Every structure is written in structure tokens, then in C-alpha cells.
Length: 123
Image (tube, rainbow, N blue to C red; front, side, top):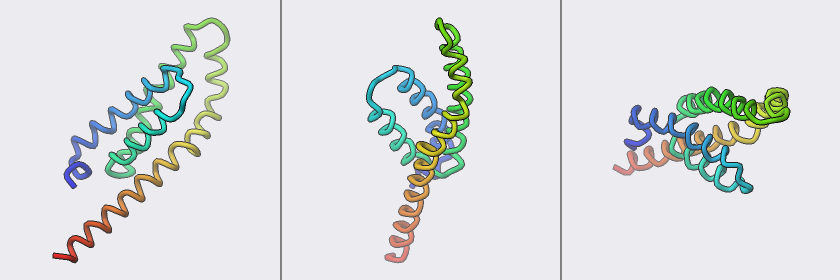
């Protein structure tokens, strides 16, 4: 599969995920269906866990300062609340987003390896 073995394509996917998901989450929509769908789609596109972690680190490095800056420009205590709740946000992200993404990537890789093995044995 050229998509999963091409390092340049995987890097582009890893870079686009944080940008797209930040844009979607910054629109303050009421439904979680679109962010969940985009996350599952990108999880299926990422070639391995290394690219998943790269993409996740880029997302956090981009989004936390930007959200803090956005909240800081608003009136009130948005930035203070954001920083105070950051450990909880990170813990919830790990449980509800990162672990399921890891499971999706691992299962997809296992299925692709089984398929490749089956096709190789067939020939």
C-alpha cells in the first residue's frame, strides 16, 4: 500500500490533522459528530503509531498556545480557567481520543498485514 509506506504522504497527513481539527474545534459547534468523524478518518490514514504521536504532538503544540491566546483576549477569566483545567483536558484527551486512535491504527495495521500475508500466500 503506497499510501501507508510513503513517508512524504504520511508527514503531510500528520501535519494537516492538527490544523484541520483545530479549525473544526474552534468553530464552537454543538455536535461532536464532525470532530469524531475527522479523527477516525485521520486515524485510518496514518501509517503507524509514530505518525499518530507526531500528529498529536503537533496538535498540542499548536492548539494550546492559540487557545490560550484566544481566551486571553476575551474578557473574563477564560485564560485562567483554561490553564487551570489543562491537566484535566489532557487526561480526558488521552482517555477519549488518543487511546481510541491508537487502537484504530493498530487494528488497521494488523488487518492490512493479515491481508498482505493472505495475498502473498495465495500467490
